[in-house]
Image (cartoon, rainbow, N blue to C red):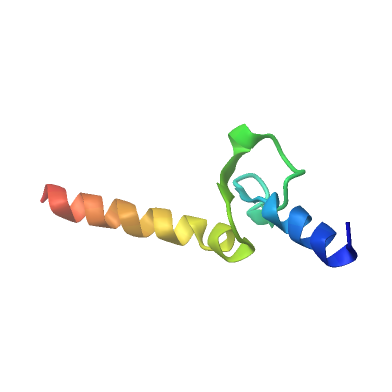
Length: 65
């Protein structure tokens, strides 16, 4: 396997999580999954997890009114 293929394989299995305890994005290794949101396919999605959840909740709340 070439180096490029190894990097691709590693990234194919990379998952990102947002830790609710530390308020940071973590890679596969980190806090227990019960304390995290995810997994997400990219760091950017994990970073914006709380914003997206908040927006969804606002949308649901406005539908109920």
